[in-house]
Length: 119
Image 1: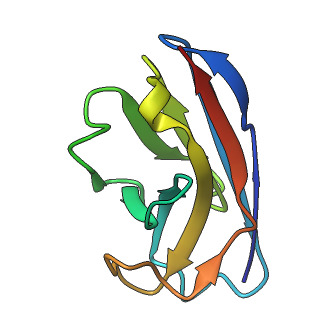
Image 2: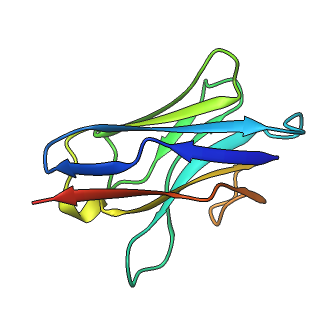
Image 3: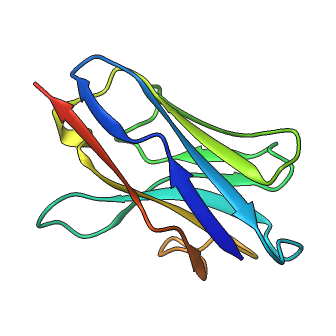
C-alpha cells in the first residue's frame, strides 16, 4: 500500500487547510485510515481516524470540533479538513493506514506534509 499526502502549507492562525491522502496498491486489507502529526522535538501523536466505509470517525481531544476527517466516494482518498488552526497545530502530518485501528499507527505510512501555522 502506498500513501501520498498533499495539501500542507503555511497559514495564519485562524485559517484553514485541507490535507489529502491518496492510497494505491493492495488496499483490500485496509479498514482504517488516519492522520498523525509530529511537531519539532515532540513525539508523533494520533490526530484522527476513519473506517473504510467512512461511518465511524474519531478525533484527538486537541483537534475535536476543529478538524474533520472524511473519505471520498472511491474510498481510496482521505481528507483532513483543518479549521481554526492554531500555532500549536504546526507539525509534519502523516497519513496512515492498516487493517485495524492501532493508536500507534498501522503498517502503512505516507511521506508526510508540513503544516505551519503562524501567529
